[in-house]
Image 1 (cartoon, rainbow, N blue to C red):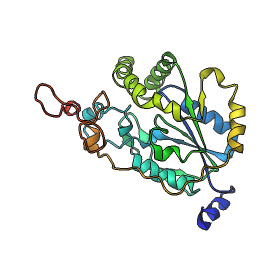
Image 2: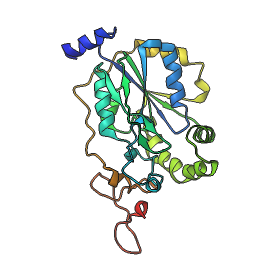
Image 3: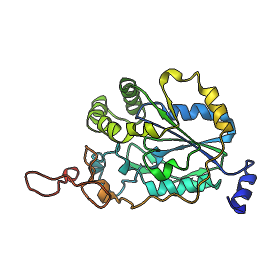
Image 4: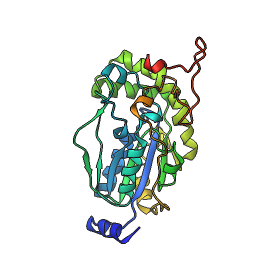
Length: 268
């Protein structure tokens, strides 16, 4: 931590560096609930950051195309922007964060202004998916929640807050959420420092908050990098099975057995 960042942190009344706490788990597992309850116990010392706000802005696609994008695949996240904002936050600097509109799959024109805090509670589906992220966290939590409970919560949330019908939520769960959870979310459990079940909450919240306060910050040798970026055109080729057509980004192309060429089901 350099002198400039130390000075910034002192201006906001806390020592550097910042503690990053990652809260991950499946859709409907209670990530946001847990982050908010921990913030209540930690008070002004903690700020909230959600990976959901870093979904890619699809304003360049027609509305019909936006609805066909697989939002349960990690490629739906703007990782370069997330890592850039996270670097600023963990250095104790103010930041300008995106705000995502799930009804239109676009970003709000006005960004959110981040005020530095000594503890940052981050919730998201894939916070432990990338090795360059895992090395930044002081503590990592995985919410291990039964699928039946997660689905019930997803139905309630998407119908009330995102204008979705019950049929569309169930269809997306079967086609995207369940297979993407098994492929990209559940494997993160092995990287978590703590696995939390619904039975341990909310009774364990106070102890967890105390543990966070006593944790040393995770010092990193340098900024995290996101690797190759995925543009909107590439993102539109993520099919319901989470497979990218292009080989450029490390995914094998899907072969169309009828034509012998690469399939482009998400574009048809």
